[in-house]
Length: 243
Image (tube, rainbow, N blue to C red; front, side, top):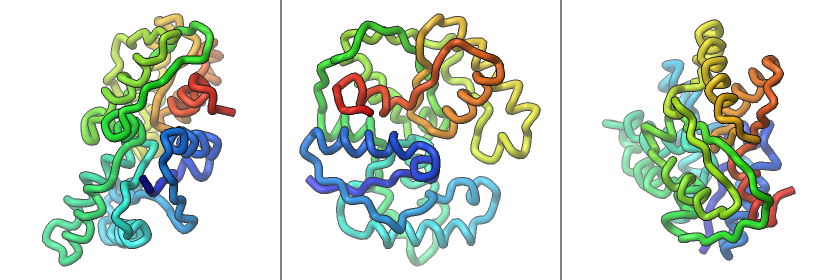
């Protein structure tokens, strides 16, 4: 099987090691991964800010860059929500709609693809550990891929997943929301961290790079003892692939 890998903006700029671990997880299952060097943003920041014409230009760049009939694998439920759902709304009534729809139907979040398409089975190679989980808002409510990630975690025999009391509440990142409303965003992330610390776990995991940047930055300022890790870095380590 051959797939495209869309690393996302943060995957290319900050979480490059995570992107490599994602590719390793796919290759472990015998998948040939195609990485297009001219890939860029999914367009969500400009879309959420109301720049619809500019966002359509980004969308068509992506649609035509990933033109072969391969699945497009994305390590972010937020970007998948944009590419699989919001792209269609953006092109409703436009002549390119069918072209965009053909693309959107091929977009999968990585955990969703590992779970539902590849039906992975993992052996946990790590020591016993307690972790908790933050669900990204777009992954939870738009792309709806959280259950696949949790199903994969349940295969890791030495990992105890301790649920957050208010797991489904936003961390305050929200893309441009954190920039436009910094005081509200800061209050929200502090509430999230109090919840995380009450679980008494070693790691907070999430499959969204933006949420992790927001949470880990605030945790550092609050001198929290809990560490953060991207879910795909954690998974790669547990199955013997991660750096």
